[in-house]
Length: 413
Ligand SMILES: *Cc1c(COP(=O)(O)O)cnc(C)c1O
Ligand SMILES: [Zn+2]
Image (cartoon, rainbow, N blue to C red; front, top):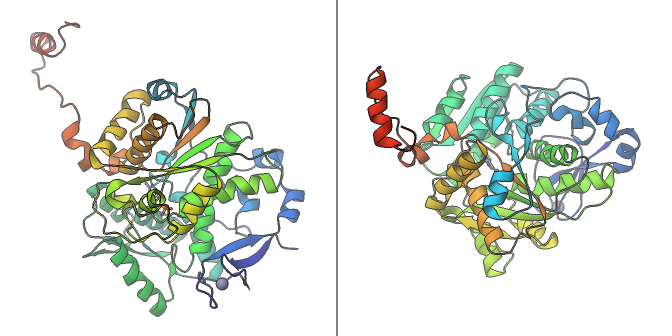
């Protein structure tokens, strides 16, 4: 018997076989992988997971891959850091940073792409592709290299050097599109109709998105098999946010955690905040916007899962927050200064929003809180280059050093 029942429409519930499809023919709702949790419950245990590989594939029983072969560049099991310095500064009792910026291609995208590329191989595709805001292109190109697949990646033309280089090094077929992400996505939706390629976040989206659940599984395991009280995570398309929620709920369904009472709060850049705006306006309709923000990895003006994010925020009694460009820079610097973690602009959004949520009383000081840091600061150097200390140029002599020290740090001299 299979633990995977097939794909299921989120809207009308129609069932589909496991194929490279992503929308319902009847109602155009998104398709989602449907599991037999009763069966999984009999197979999975905290012990079986602990005995598994040291990476995201330890949660394989809850991922949509059957058979042995997976594409693995070493994603997952990233640090969950107890952030006491930052907690003190914000006024929280117990705060953790899930530092997913240290995955092999330096963002959490390695999780969904590890799953999607494994599925692409099972389906027999020879080309892995994506419409990307940057990090996804890096991850797709890296996984394709590892798997011996061709890669074809599409990005908006105005991305940071770190993201362009971070993908280019793996030698994908690489297109920079004159337009924003929503233009890229529209183009790729046409490409997928004419070329038999595995677009990880289009025709393989139901499988791709499942990989993000491992960010819920890991946090629960690292907390000693319990869910946090409050989670703060960023939204671009909303895939990660919805899958964190699905992941925590699955843990309870299969009996790996006893109870679940997690509040889910969403973070967006103010310059691209369609979900936040709908939340503030008290409507379920997410109106597309034209992005203008330094958080380019979150610059999706028309988020596919925005509506579901709003429902999760409401159901979990969470909140939504948004951060301006200067607040994003401050957020990046705050995390670096307090915890020694260098995140990209998306992480700056998360930290800035965390700070605002605590200040506004939306996160209780006693809630065990986890903030998801999803990407690495070395990829968005442009955003902070003018906001960090410059080294003092000195001659290689003790006199020059001491003169400079007296000037810069009299207290130390
Ligand atoms: C892609 C991305 C996200 C969120 O993406 P979703 O489309 O909402 O799943 C968050 N942070 C970083 C750094 C990303 O690259
Ligand atoms: Zn449907």
